[in-house]
Length: 110
Image (tube, rainbow, N blue to C red):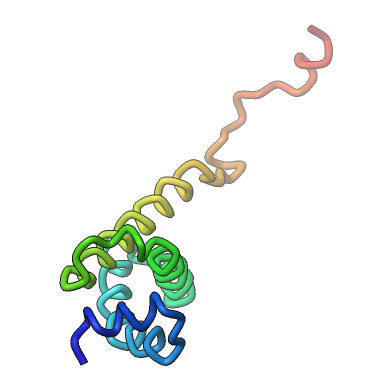
């Protein structure tokens, strides 16, 4: 079945069509996530799921259903890049990385 027909069915609430679309595109989405994030399988699965959910709730914005694959991969790339941005902001430092330059006693006496 052509993707345009499947997308029409998904928009109409057909869960079988939704599963068919997911099965057809999930590996392509995984490949994009892995290439961008180089993360473990569980993280990639989470990012693919988040991407697919975002796409599902944004289907009305899709103007040309024949471009669904490219549109879906673009969403996946954006989700992956946002993940990397969040990950960089939450960087955890070890005590050895912080160093010994902080004097605890002087912080109480000043």
